[in-house]
Amino acid sequence: MKKFVVSTGDRKSNVQLLADGRVFVDDTERSVEWISLSQARRVLRIDGRSFDVDVVSVSREEGVRLLVNGFSFIVHVQDERSLLLQRLGFAGSIDQRGKEIKAPMPGLITKVMVQPGDIVEAGQGVIVLEAMKMENELTAPSGGTVKTVHVTEREAVDKNAILIELE
Image (tube, rainbow, N blue to C red; front, side, top):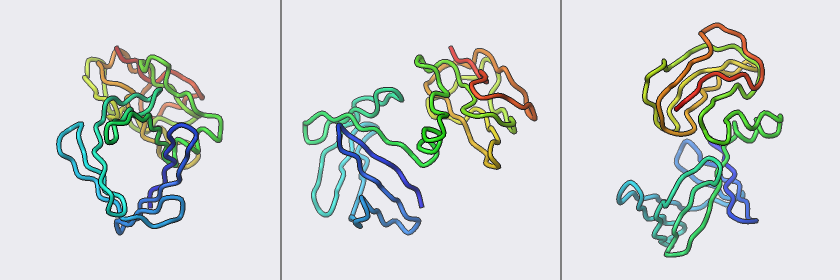
């Protein structure tokens, strides 16, 4: 099961995606179908109602800008991990420009997946940090080229230590 909080404006909804394909929104089961027409254009069917959805932009800071049946919305989606980090005060592990990846909490680097000169895409896994007996894959906040890798595998790091710089 995957849990998310989806918010737009002042409205927040708890969304659960079950392994068997069922979807619950605020504890109510919904019939949901997501049809991709192109990379940025989709049809969303919820309980038999269809919505034309165009993805205008995606930004970690600003959220996802959508056109739904011609109306503009900004949607923020947070998964369980990001909500936990926020509750624990570990949010802000990425700088505002999206060029530095910092340790969200103290831990041990278990895997470095990139090296200087590598080209990465937004959302691509770049490093694995073990903390609180969990492995956390940190991802590139934006596309770019790896400028510097400041850590090695099996290295202990402090909260907010710069792990990787992008350019």
